[in-house]
Image (cartoon, rainbow, N blue to C red; front, side):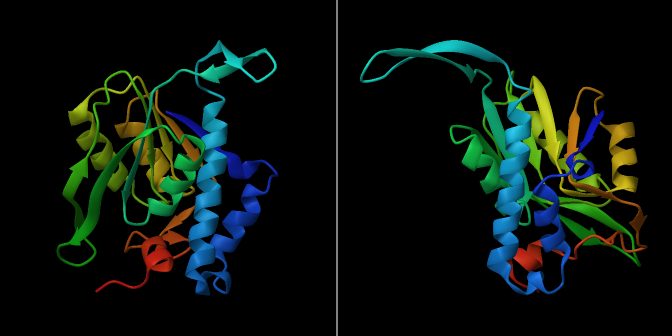
Length: 216
């Protein structure tokens, strides 16, 4: 698996990530969602550089211009609910992309043990397309792996990009062992610690709650 950590480069992305983590800025849910959307746009722009392009003619009021534009059919997918603002940012760039959604969550058993439960999945035909699967947090990697395998029931994508701004080193290593080698993982920060409850440290907390409010 190819791993690209954009947070290692100096760019405005790091400012948005810093605000996501900041407990004072987190008090404003709209700001939190907006920053996730901005981050999604940055990742989508970087992914756009990897696509296949061909020259097209564009007819202007005064003549004909030639421009290279992407040819790859794209499916933008996310895991509900925390991934929705990130997904929207990706769609702001790939505005003609098809969409896929997976509702997956942790179902706790005894103690700290849990399994991933999928309640809903909706996807177009993925055969031969470029799949961009986004989720704000990558803690253990289990949710993303299960969501990816569920989506593959609807076709085999030609290329897959995983967009996970805040990731743990544990999850990165897990996906390296369990996901196809030709997949690219895009991150903005890879944190070293994972607690016994599988929370990323320093992380940023519960992204879904910060974006949309507490849940029961």
